[in-house]
Image (cartoon, rainbow, N blue to C red; front, side, top):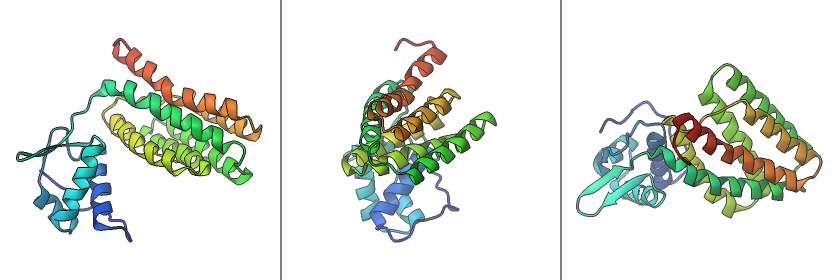
Length: 222
């Protein structure tokens, strides 16, 4: 199980949180490959923590669907099922739509300005085919809306689902297109007009459209 050594570590977080965050990142970006076996001792040594926070982190990752734990046998990274995009995006789209609806009456001009700047950066990345950077800007854009909604139950659920979306992106299941630029702007305009219905509708469309694009690209029935 090869483990990187040149990674940055966040400060002021518990050993369990640090272990969870780093292992999840390695699973998302493919450093730890699907079905790869994970060893407590190796992870503990790499992260400079004891085996207890590693085990706690793996238990949480198991609950979230990133690893599978087999009592008495071991732990391994879950397989990637690209078609799961059709299971992940509908609930994520619904939560993002709800967040946009809640955010509409309370969003301020500075936040709207930041959203527009992020969408501009997203567009530039798309046009130069830098899809990794585009995904980062897209993530920041939507997270800002989630933060504005000020609902921890929504943000916690979205965090897990978005992590799975990021993993699918790294396995070429999520396709980013220029259409998202227009949808992002439509959401912003709805915020400016204090139109929660349109903001919610466009947020949902922006997320779920990727399902049809994926199955069209792969010629699979939805």
